[in-house]
Image (cartoon, rainbow, N blue to C red; front, side, top):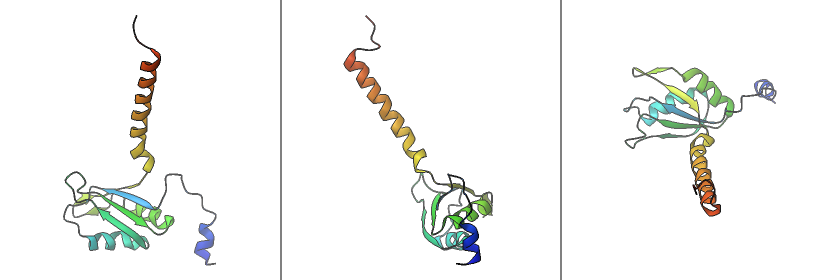
Length: 123
């Protein structure tokens, strides 16, 4: 086992750290090659998805092979200036996207139960 890999084995990362980074404030004209050049400096990349729709332009998902490479990229590229734009690099969290949907569904279920059992209605 390599010394660096052995040292990594004992490191505890914060729970939000994962292999998927969400990047905001990207220049609209950035190319895939430039993305790979910029983020590839920190380790092997599995995939980069750059937003092309009107509401996703300027954003991208970067998926690293290794969680430590993703952490290094997030630490070093957050606030990095690319084509006069300062990057916002965050760890992607699936729970953030689904939390609102879950709350809406629970609220609808509660309202259905209130109606079914006549709770909250005025006499």
